[in-house]
Length: 183
Image (cartoon, rainbow, N blue to C red; front, side):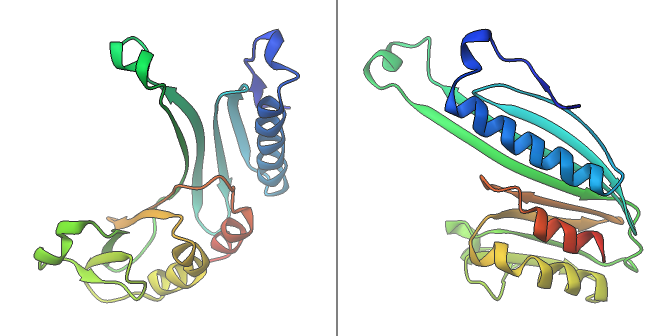
């Protein structure tokens, strides 16, 4: 496996370690099936893995899971908080979009006061765009529709020929990524 473990020996039997190892193996197999490159590290508490796939466009992939805890303050003795961050970032470079750009993200409370944002079809997101709507952008939005419905899309930006899709999800969504590779 090219994604390496940096776990302590006592972590190896942890169900969290095994879950992260399985996630990394699945990702590595997917990228290998596309003749891509992969690297990264994982343990029971986190993983940080990268992939690069060349299809119709070059795609740079990043998956990160980390558990942050509040330690070192007096309040951490009273309230032990752990925050889990699980994200995926899919970046596609050198897209010819005829000067089209757009930005979609989850709606915030004050967005209704900002005239530059319009409401997306899914009322939980806002969108701002410049230029004509391209076929490429329409295809991307259509492929990502299930992730909008499940609210796992964090934000999407298409600007200067670079598409960045950020997810907040425990799932790799390799089926959706597979569809994006065909665009």
